[in-house]
Length: 423
Image (cartoon, rainbow, N blue to C red; front, side, top):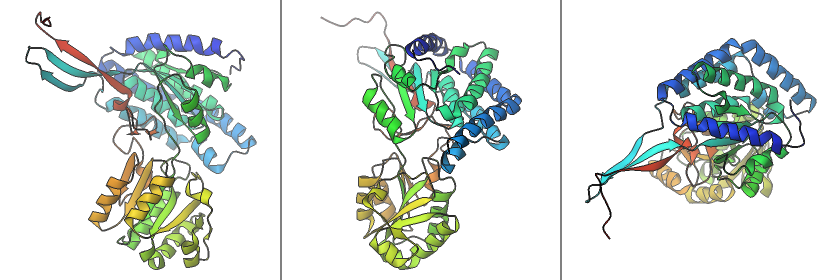
């Protein structure tokens, strides 16, 4: 592990090599990129024991630092998770090639034939925290979309990420592609992040994936365009017309399936009209799973096991077994609360009233809105994208899961026949 103080001397050559590799990948045929990814998945399976050993080293360090259970869960790898990562790489490989797609075409009266064609972004710098699966997802998606990836993972996952990148590079080598198309920044020095954010001319896009402090730093310091992944303060709203059994099942899954993922529900919003009938069974399921509930006055008056919430709770991404409970007077009040306190990530409504659902889906200003489904479906793999680099909560270029298709831009290809523009 490099810990050089002069991080500029570390980042500059990596970025240059990534730029050179991106020019090769930009015109690489789809079949060659697929071959590289299938070979990378095979290399990952073959290196299973090395990967588990590297992860054990990371886990020992993380436990010594007393990281939270949610953070440890994000970091931990086992054989099942490694197989899931390998299958994820293969799923990306099997996707249609996003490069070279004709997005639109038309002919002008003067005979010019104009087409808008999808092309790679170039070099993508991905800055993320302690999830080693992001290393595989980001690397695979960049290769599939003809981009080079410069990865700066969290210090907690350094050894795991380095082992995964070695597998991705082995796949690139077997396909005859430059291994510099996927590189891991070899230092845990946080100054490396600043160097990446200033690498104008070499890195084309920065994608942060992590907590609010990381995203804020990238937004404030980057001289390079960014695709921002903000925190996941996600809501599930139980409407007055919600089926109680469905509400219990969906909320339990949305909160407790995995509390450390960005699509986990952090706030339960419930109509006052069904507070007496629906809150207690939902609370029972959450409490049975070890989840603490913090609610407004109506909520804790309805169930004494709920403790009072503070104003801070409404805007908190817990990433833990804690959920806030907000009582509202109907769909308009629910929309207003979510738009005010949410992070514009993922929000859901549970109801049998299609008109209420339509109003919620139209009115909630989030990248993903769901109807009678768990917020934990906020995932590129579940959307059929194979994987994702993150969930973009911005409005420009990409919104929602950022998969291979979202890692392209476009150019115009214009064909004429000696066509000139009149004076």
